[in-house]
Length: 370
Image 1 (tube, rainbow, N blue to C red):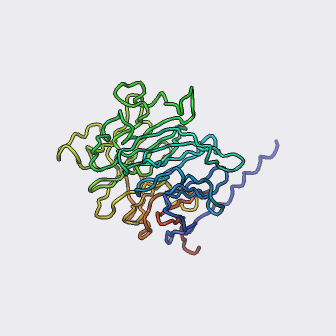
Image 2 (image 1 turned 180 degrees about the vertical axis):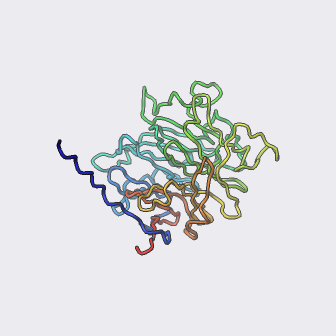
Image 3 (image 1 turned 120 degrees about the vertical axis):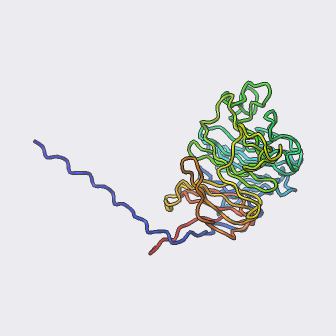
């Protein structure tokens, strides 16, 4: 009989030394009111987004200048978000407020390696009755659809009544396929929860949001950070499987602020309202900035941890889900960071922290003996 094959040789395993500390390492700085950072999937270059309407390719130069059409008089206005189409890295989508203060979601095309400001195709325009609570984030979900977070229209106390009105786009999460069809600038997915309903907009995927400032998908979960009014900042985590035709999500504003009743007295009706997995009071911060779920191969100890920060508090925290309950990290991962406004991920999978002061910081681990 032939001799058996020798056993396969397993590759040597890499055992990491224990983490002695986490630090922030500066990737780039000197930007003018930086609000977001994204990885360009075609080049692995980081794109730094300035509120005034300029997108920089870090270490390369200006990638796209939209300052001639962006209105940024109020600190919550400007070029606020961008996302690449998952099937075509040459299609870039941005969310900005125009010179009249209204929200514009547009598509730009890259040709011969460069984005052309004149290639703008407006996908969606939403009138804004006030200058604040514009939302502004864009994210493609695992379903390939574009999710657009819109605030409640601004002012205070939901005075425009948008939070609990799914017939309006303000105060909601809009879900569309941004590809044009039949002369229309986008397509409405037929499995949107209000598709075909007479009392609600078919574009609305979820409602009850005050000012969603950054959200992220991780597998079948969506993490949403919603800026509070008087007292509470919050993070809500939902499963995409919870949404189906006729079964939308309601994040609760303005019946709830966090887990507390905001309108309707101390005994408000909570039936059908989502409640956050984490909330914190204005004693420790004033405006939440949602982040990303860590999957950095260099820091497996934090794999699956969701990062978030506070614009006023200047800190970064982490939470992990355990049996659908949030388990927060011990204290703050970082303090004194600056005006934390956003997060991102680089080409190596490392998490990035973005400050309005104009810096991009990478989270790194220092290891014993390393």
